Length: 333
Ligand code: TYM
Image 1 (cartoon, helix red, strand yellow):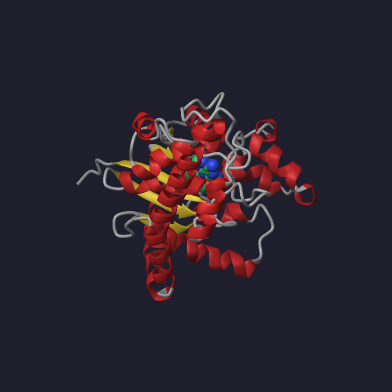
Image 2 (image 1 turned 90 degrees about the vertical axis):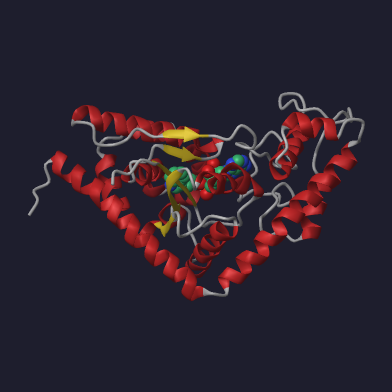
């Protein structure tokens, strides 16, 4: 029977500790989308090595991220959960797409510029090639839609450009993917510096709430969140970035709209808001953390999930690489 569901693709790098930004902007949405799409969710360990990693930690974080996906409600029977390095087609397609990507385009990427500034000792080719590998990820699975946070906008745009460029030179080969950003929470900001994105690698750990933080740490970080001095709880990211960020986080975790959230806190002070967000986030993280720990103790199960994922992902990705090789004139036996 012809497959009628659209294809959805996304990935997270198994680097550092994941933050509630990763959860809100990406993983929490996947759960809601998994019934409506054919989903592929990868653990992007090939992207991770563009910044130097400790091998034992990288291995550990890989399983930990897989356990997190499942603990967040992503069903490994419904979705293909796999490790990027288990599918050699990613590297193969990346190589081909490199020849359809201009150096100037890569030099202009904001993330490349940021990361090169932060890792001056290791501005490697992989760091620059990062968006092409990401394009290969998405295009291999003929994805219709890619749910990500707003920080990935430029990378999705370039993936679309590369796909269109290839399709125009040869004939339609790749589905041109659309990004999917959530209305609320596509950019969660740092609690200490609310004009900046909350990041896994932030210098000040009080600005990021990690998914592994315990209840006390979560509540303490929210209590210390930077707001402003007018004590008015209103959503206005331009003039009130700190308060708006807290309202967004509360709204996503409570599944209430921003205006319902504003009404809930009408007449209350910033202290009330900070405590309420902190407690809510801690309440929501606790069951995820304990389920993640339970899953991590069952390595046999996690390996089975990865094996199934690798099999299905290789099958889908192999079809696309085969097509591409044929079109570009690679002699086939
Ligand atoms: P990564 O690992 O940096 O982040 C994973 C996801 O979390 C989102 N995100 C945020 N969303 C809202 N607010 C924030 N503060 C925040 N911080 C991070 C990111 O947008 C992302 O969706 N390059 C990707 C991984 C990747 C990928 C792919 C994604 C590799 N191949 C193919 C989609 C499709 C990355 O580094 O994500």
